[in-house]
Image (cartoon, rainbow, N blue to C red):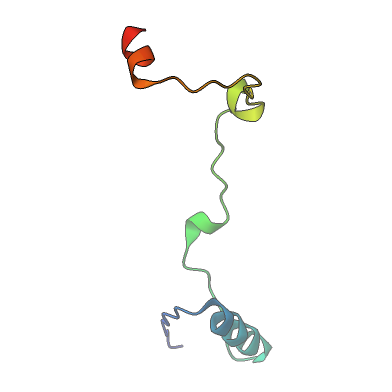
Length: 69
């Protein structure tokens, strides 16, 4: 048995090659990326991200007004 490693930058060509190789009975394809099957669980998003508040009365302040505040 021989091992061949291919680095392919184009996703479309990669999928074509993999589909061709899977049809061949003497070729076995092994996934070398162990983390591809694992999903990282993230924490809950804050309510401000899920339901952002929109400003109804938006007012532009001038430079002097902002400095006074």
